[in-house]
Length: 262
Ligand SMILES: [Fe+2]
Ligand SMILES: [Fe+2]
Image 1 (cartoon, rainbow, N blue to C red):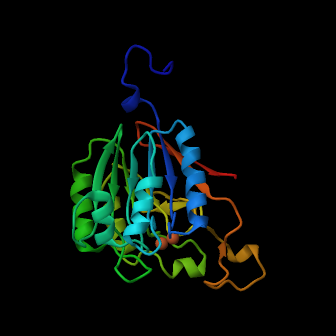
Image 2 (image 1 turned 180 degrees about the vertical axis):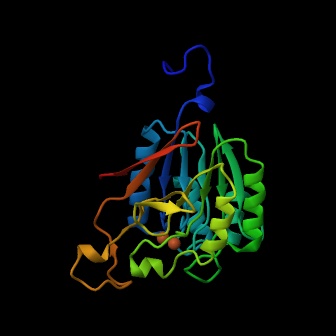
């Protein structure tokens, strides 16, 4: 790497590239499978350091769907995942983590110069999200021990996206979450999915970045004369998308959103 000659560790000293995708909703049908394959075939051709998938990996949380997750969400770099409201904790754990039980799935994973704090914001049986006291306590401990920039991942958006349908199923304890984030200067950004829409905002003074949906894109109220309902809010024709986050060793982040064309 010409930027850091002289044997400097390129993984820890150069900017990292994080490919962030979400909501593959693998359901056993051909449509989600085709779009997921399109995205991951593209990512495997890209020079990224890590792939993050922010939930709704499966559509109904069945064992067959998680077999597809295991087969399709693969790359030569680490592929980090967390659960969404369409996932099932017990089936997810059995298939992807090799454990059992339906406790929240929280994981801290170091990749290169970044620590990924992956939080389970799901509430079994509900579309909205809650982190809850136990997960926030876990997160507080992870952040207190961090010696590098931290990217917090969760499925549900903790800020209004100003799209009424989507905002009705966001994170419900965002104020408690914000208090934890504010206490830690190590948090570089918060990365979420669920909205099926690439979006950027601020949360607790940090960047909040939502990945585009693989399976569909949520339509915005101001781009259509139609009244949006759950029956017509998903644009099924537009291409899937990817967010590429470039994270510097100092914790600054720049995001590029791209679609993946068939
Ligand atoms: Fe989803
Ligand atoms: Fe979701």
